[in-house]
Length: 256
Image (cartoon, rainbow, N blue to C red; front, top):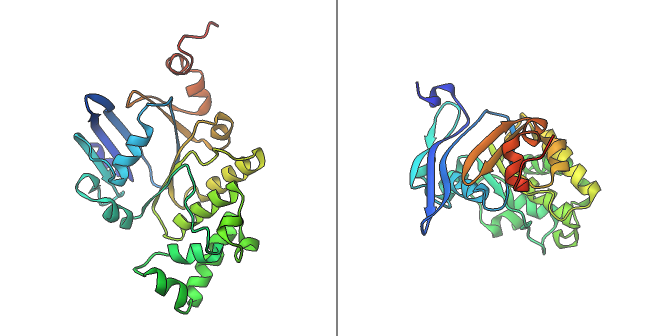
């Protein structure tokens, strides 16, 4: 029986990717349910970013299956970055990328789903439907009172929330979020966790993170990557108590 019959929203099977002889992804199997919030952890060089690159079409796997869509099982290995984005797969990188000379509202307006150029987006009349959509996103990301502020004036954490909002404006099915807590204050980190938890069920979400306090706040199921392969999966307690994980992170086994 093929795993695709199980209707995972995202499926990677037997995926391999090498760069100049270095195997960044090694026989990777990964399965994700619709509406799931999944956290991925692993040491530097574990293959986390390469995995995200493969899902979004920035990198082609050497071998293996990468499928998206609970009912359609679309083959992502045959699509380019824009095509994959149009399927509803959005990615947020670690460093926020916003239009600093435009307002928060304008940033979201520019990100709304649909074929529009920058000129039309900013100078055409905003419809009531667009405004309602932007207002809903502003409320979700907690920036309603900042709507008319320039994005460049926001704090680091607020820029991160705005970029998540820019993805939400595109109505994505799958969100890939890379180290959202990096560089944040404790308060901002906690609010970011609450934001991601509020999206659970409405979107499928993969979060790559190193901050284990943050992971503990948001994690339902944790996947540990090591040398391009899934080392183990489970709850936060499961993976933190796994001897293999201790070896990977500490270089030795902890004594009882």
